[in-house]
Amino acid sequence: MDAKTFYKTLAILLGYGLIIGGFTVFGSALETKVRILDIIVSLLVYTQLIQFLIYPLIDVRNPAHKEVGMMGIHFGVLGTYCIFAIGIMVFGIIADIPFGYQLMAQLVIIFLALLGRVATLFSGENVQRIYEKEQQQVKGKKMLGLVMNDLMDALPRAESLESSCVQKLQDIQEALRYLTPSASEEARQYEADFCRTAEDLKVLMRNTDLNGERIKEAVGQLERILSRRKKINS
Image 1 (cartoon, rainbow, N blue to C red):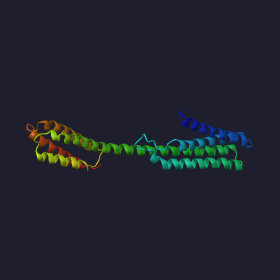
Image 2: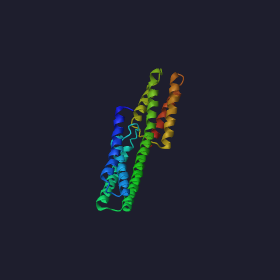
Image 3: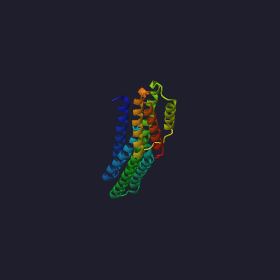
Image 4: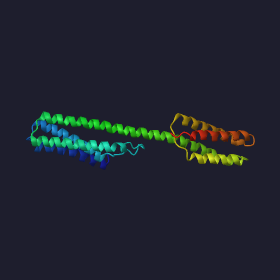
């Protein structure tokens, strides 16, 4: 345990001790059951605030940053709970509210806070799902770009390749830059066909003299596949 963690833990434990000690010393006039309830509520509020202040709001290891979508609800739930919990506790002391009523009131707001927490987690899961969907959409486009770049890198080794084929391949590479990402099954099928055709073409270009006609056919096939894939926008 490093010094920073040690002092942080010590400060947290000291906070718990101050809460319990404060009620023990200054809350002797309170009914025992009420004092115990107030201690538990205070510790719960303190714990929530400690989690908010000490632990990072956003998990930088998760690129989805789903916590961003949870912040609004989380702050609202946390703030509302703390205000009502402390308010009920203070009002109960001032107005000498019976223990049973205070207990029920605290349980009600804890229940509502738990519902709010569920809503917060649900919101975070939605952000995670949207991120994964977007990543799936972009993945196909990135794969096409990598395959096409690999094919273009092989061009210098393709001796006597017709300039028309080279131009068409350059046009295909340029068109891929403006391709709309899509996660549909049809788009994935076209992308797989494109990659397979590109790999076949790279093999054919090893002997342009022997495979001249097949190379033209493969380039044309790439153009047709890309044309069909470009028609899919979502």
